[in-house]
Amino acid sequence: MYSIDKEWLNEVIEKIQKKMDWVSDKNHTKVPYTTDENGNYDDRSDESIDWTIDNGINFWTNGFWGGIQWLLYQNTGDEKYRIYAKECEKKLEKCFDMYYGLHHDVGFMYMPTAVANYRLTQDAEARKIAMHAANLLAGRFNPVGKFIRAWNLESKDTRGWAIIDCMFNLSLLYWASEETKDPRFKQIAMMHADTVIKNFVREDGSVNHIVEFNPETGEKVCSYGGQGYEDGSSWTRGQGWGLYGFMISYRHTGKKEYLDTAKRIAHYCIANIPESGFIPVDFRQPKTPAYEDSCGACVIAGGLLELAKEVPDVEKEVYIRPAVKILKAIAEHRSNWDTDCDAIVQNCSGSYHAEKHHITMNYADYYFIESILKLNGEGIFMW
Ligand code: GLY
Image (tube, rainbow, N blue to C red; front, side, top):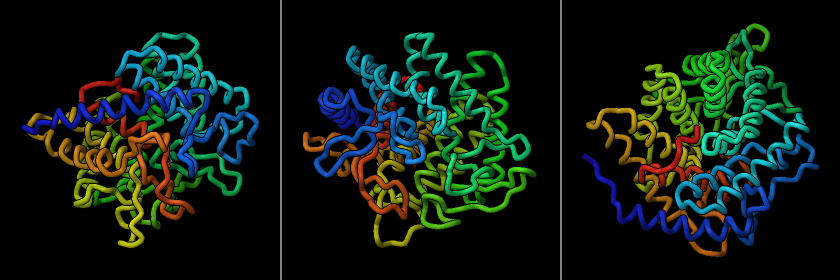
């Protein structure tokens, strides 16, 4: 039986608490995404920014800041985190008045904010916001192709595009069905998940990032490498979205095929984790430059820990050991515990072909904190 190094875990939790105490005080009026060259968080809460530019209040990662605050609230019991979480949630409400700019990522935005708030405090206003978001997401379903349409790009025709990341957004649909007892939301989520099994998951357990369908006939047209190295490669964060995403679908439906699919993706990931524990941007990228994505690392670790909860005791170690290896590599070598940077997790990459690599990203911190608390048996299941 695998036993976690409790001394190490407690030390990391203490470091998270110490850092996030001042980081949250310093930044609670913002909705941050990444840090600048001086280590200060930016602010994506501007409502006046054109939604097509994608860095205003509609930005898809804007829920993670609120999610971090809820995790800290639960972990410390400190009221200030509850207040900060609600500040973030309030700002995100504006997106509904604007309407344009809301996208398939409403699950990422409103699960760790409005739904978390509703689950923890039964806030009726938060429930209403989350229901709006769930209806928008359901409205993106293509009933012929049985997929949820990704993005609203102006520059490309994405009417037939679906992406692996969207497995996470399904949580909002499952929540809406559980809450209203209306099965339509869950039916849409399951149809999308089944389409992903058929069209995204490859023989070896790796997954595509983007698949294009004909939006009129539903037939599969092709796949794209998306944020990974190239078509047919395996963008690591996408492997994480798939692995953890199928665990979410399994948790809400009990459908065994979802658990088995999560296992297949997990086994592919485990077989490809480098000795160092540092996760590349793409498991099939060239050896140099050795771009890393610590964010993908944290998402994969979170998925492995969810999987470990659902398997018999004898199998748990298979998933917990690699998750701990990844998290130790982050905590010991890719974390900033000082006051010269607002973010904890370093060396994240938006995509393989991004202009800049090894930046900070708020959702890396979110999934890192979530995973560390999960290892300690804490934190609500946010998804
Ligand atoms: N969902 C987009 C990303 O992971 O960057």
